Image 1: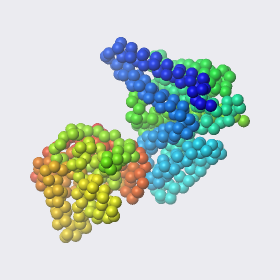
Image 2: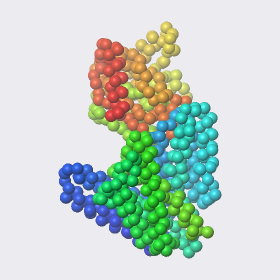
Image 3: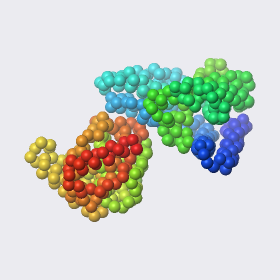
Image 4: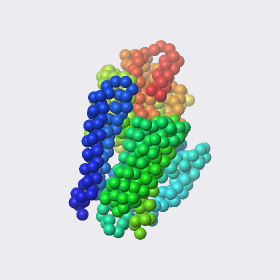
Length: 316
Length: 205
């Protein structure tokens, strides 16, 4: 079945584009209203984010429409760029060089190749089992024991977050859900949309009524008000999108609650790592958003949970 | 053609962001000098230059390495237009004479149109720290007092391609061109100190 014959998918794409149009208009109006003062910087940042959202949404929509292979390719490139940002900021030594080279040029392509050939068994253990042993072995052979535990953890965490976790997004395409055959692209769309909307809504709620930070030592910008407002409204949106999924409305809402909570946790974990390294963003790849990793941190942590919950309950 | 593909490829692999504190498009002759930690160093400075200037910027490289094999000879001669110098064995009587000959050769080959890319530490530092400058930069600048100097700080290249490795790990890097300053000083110690300080200042800019 062609992508554009799927009415639900067309509706999802249309909804996202409509949202972006509304966002751009609001941003434009704000830009005309607020021309100076500290609010101006926020408005400029918001408009830069909206422009970047257009770009990201278009790339994602085109990849989904172009089919499974292009979707898998897109996420492998995102993994590669995210891993690059992660490793750049983490302190490694020359003894890690070979293990890192393998991570970029062998492990990352292999993980996505397994998604492509739908070899679930190896896909789910390649990095946590095989590579955690093999790469640590390679690093050991380099003979440098200084900060050894930290350095092997860097390689392992980098691969887990940037490659293993993220590869669960296109891996949704390999699930076989009875009555939902050949429609899994919408599942991928649902996950990405709900998680990214939750990020945006947390930002909006936090900026407007945020007072009490959840973890002040890690991120003063993540507040209880932002968390509850953002996750709450993203949950409602998730429930309202049930028609695009194999779930009933309350199930879709529950899954949205789970993935947005995981996404929040992921954002917090990545903030803690950034704080440990003394930086605010992972890079300057996307204007207004920092780096690639800053944009996808929630998605990385939400994807494997969404994949496994869906697999457990809906894909026997 | 090959030159621009190579330049774009190197910038892509090294995820390079380039920053300028001097006019990138100035057509004056310059001596670009950088910290040396990787084989990628001169390629990165060269790639970061605007294409028009790239043709007139010649890296200085050791003949012993770059004249070996047809591929290296081709790259050094036809793509980078490198100035290949003979490196003497340190500590021998011959060393001083060959060093002087090399400096004179650099000054001569600059002519009135070429810029040079040099690494005054003389050798690669594997830990990313910047070592003391050898006196070559001073002597070169004294022979060519008309040419301005531009410090270039290279960050992270030692992690992308460390000494002794042949395959790069594609991390992100930075190339920072500092403000140009006039050369031709008579005080060797002060000149080298000033040049090194100018480079180190770029580290956090």
